[in-house]
Image (cartoon, rainbow, N blue to C red):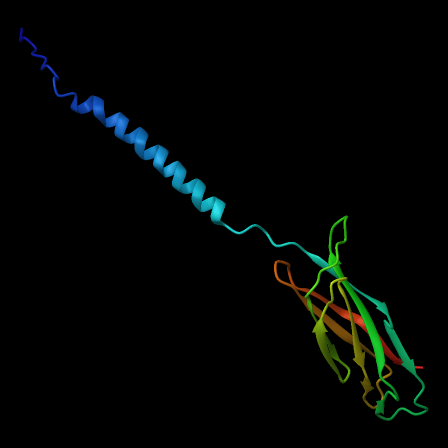
Length: 152
């Protein structure tokens, strides 16, 4: 029968390896936590509502192309889309469509008044003006039928 010889591990080479693995794991977890912390949080949503002159109507008397006879002031209020509905100051609001191109920024109360003079093409009885709102820290908001225009 052969005799087995066990060597004495006086240097503790194998015993030191798990300690290095534990240190590497702790550092890796700290780095992953730092990276996750740096990921930006989801942006908040907002709401915009036309508070005055959401529907514009005039009677042109015929079906030909028609420019409205006067400018209308469209009032818009921009707020956060949560229970508090805080006003958003400095939001860029744009109205576009039916011959209307108007833009501006909201005041401290989240309100803006844009002056528009819409147009309707020949044989078009109804059209919509699109509203687009952009604000820092918020998702963009748009409403394709914010203002309705029709022949009265």
